[in-house]
Length: 106
Length: 466
View 1 (cartoon, each protein chain N blue to C red):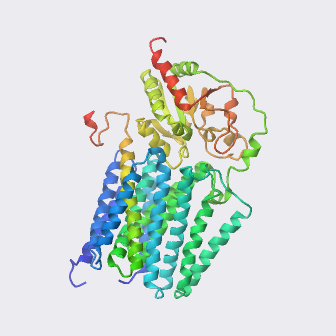
View 2: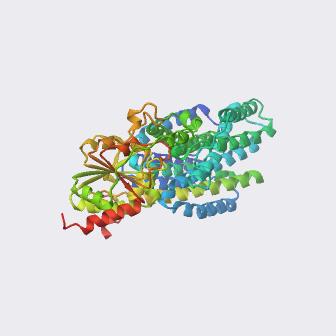
View 3: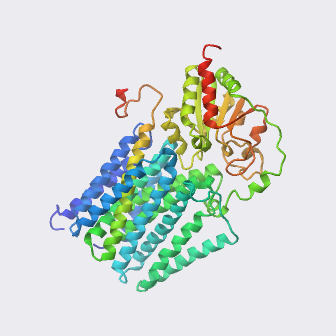
């Protein structure tokens, strides 16, 4: 697989612009969940680690790949759990919050 | 290219969908109403991408992958269940883990490919491991300071900036040599060790009050290093995820620096806070007016509009649930209660909102600095709980103050100001606050949790009296 560097740079540039525009609109209320969520998404690096460990080209690469899987997976799991816990806490004072989860029980 | 539906095409399609889901995920995070949908989109994208990757033809060893995923999950679950006050150090720790992942993958890729590495590839690989390793130790330091296992006060020494610049220069020189001569394999470890030291040195001089900026900046570095890893692995998905994370960290750093009236370079090279402590004690303090919980409750009950300004001290005293009771009892009496949240009120961006939301205070009562400052002149009582520097009018009026120019909550414009504070000791940055000596200011001395619960008791006990 030959790497097309210029394509990569275009992708990076466009993604940075999209990120800038999308994240600029995130309410300051949610800046902490934003950070924990982007952190979990960033751990998509696990796909590279999986290939590295799975291909097992050298023992060094396999060991480093496994360490990387552990680190990234803990970010994915921990990041999603804590983001969910935080987002569940945000409730409106207005008419019984409509879109949220199982709020009808109480 | 012969058939359309090869496994590789299928994998690429899972990545394409995952990318779209990631962008939607962040888009839906713009409002608390759609935020959880955003979270689910992110989770779906992640699961899809991981499943796609497991189909990769080159994978021969699933045992190590399984071990990695299981161990990572075991570590991740407790990290996802920390107390809300501990979220900043958890976040710093997760930046460290992300950086660790990127650094070790970069290292493995180097040893797999060297010496057959093109200059551009070596450049992004260098960027990946340099940013990754400095973010790793820098984030560990930040987490240690936030967890208070390391001293929070800035540690500075003479020639600090020179040492830091020198370390960084060495790392860059090694990177350039490797770009030109990728066969110099022995040099590679230097390019990891030096940034590891640099990361420690970078965070040592930074005080606890600057942590929101530092965390955001490290967030940005973690994202950029992941994007560099995307270039190395030719993964567009990773380039995009890294770019999103990097721009998120960048935006938050800018917001935090502005809120602190600082530039990036100032935060990184300033060592804020060690000068003012000496100057603080010299002056003789003018008298202040203080009040009891009964008096405070009377004034609050008579008000029609109250703005509560919480600071990190409130969270340290674990007073947020008592503050919610205060909010409830005042709201029941028809008092309009809102909260004024300074961008750096917590230990990371948005932290205070999370702490108040945890105490069941509705998010539409949590107002940003710009929203609340217009209202403060029409406010009867501004109640400050555990906040100090973000309310200091010297930031507006005194050009000699170290925080001059910092945007603050204009609580001194309210008709009455009440400050719950343990003692007259100076705040986190060690700066005296002239707000406390105003005629309209009442100091409520005591522990935030006890004092607020005493006010609540007065309010609920005497609800038929007035």
